Amino acid sequence: RISGDTNAPRPEQWTQATTRQPPMWFAFFVFVTVLATLAERPVEVLEPPLLRHGFEMELLQLGLDLKDLQVQRSSDDRRSDPGQCLRFMHIPKTGGTSIDAANMHHAVPAFDSLMRETYKRIAVARNLTDADLGSLYEDSHVSRVVYEVWFAENLRFYHMIPPNVTDQCEDLHTPPSRSPLIQEYYSACRTFCSLRDPLERFWSAFRMEVAPRTRSCDPQILETEILEILEAARTRPYCRNCFWVPQVEFVYGTRKWSSATEQYCTRWLRQENLTAEFDELMAEIGRSDVKLPAEELMASWSACRNVTTNDLTPASRKAVYDFYKEDYEAFGYSPPQLS
Image (cartoon, one colour):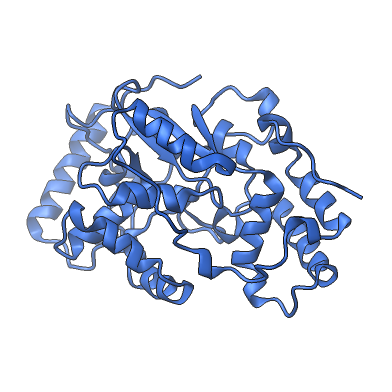
């Protein structure tokens, strides 16, 4: 079930960073707006706004509190008809980078995504156009080192959720359960995502996020790190940019899929058959020109490439199964060999 609210803020409306001093007309405008708003009715704040520190400081310099501001929406600032638009939910380590890459190369996109919105903000700042998004996206993903430099240089254009906490995640990696704004974004349109066998997904994330810094790829040594990571993820579920979050929390907004009342991803593809299923979806919407890249953009980022999930110890496989049991049950994946 998808909720029917028609006033969701779009990502491009989330306030960007700025370091300039506020002009006098801006101070007067905000002051008048606040007075008029407060005189009409109490302000309803659903969630701390996704504002960057520069703009927050401008408001504080004017003696205003963020909670005193009410977002004024114009008549065209409304949700799209869910039957007329398509959005992509990027679940980490399920082929999402390739899906975003396919769409980036088209000035007229086949679908919208939070990653595309991020790169559009960066392109505007560089006086580039939507036609440049594809090369911009691929160039920034050449290697881990290149991307880390890129991310640091362009951090102000990324929306990290929620603000002012330790374990933030990029908006595109954030499950709907963690933010009403993310819920609204995916509820506004038909939304598709890619799913993956939970053990294969975890191992892919581990090889990219952890293995490059491990002292050995020996499965017995890796077992200790795997168990430690999964134990830590139980108390800090959104650490490491939400890479360990179960897929059910993205799709259903809860870790108990049997009691879910929402479904934010309404069409899922299987990473195991991603090219064929993506092509089928694009054909359905009349965009057969949009194709997945021939090579994975981040294939070179991972370590322990010769170690497969079959090589992991039974204890490691069981720990992963126990952690992602809801994923196995919700999406019909067969449990791994546990002995």
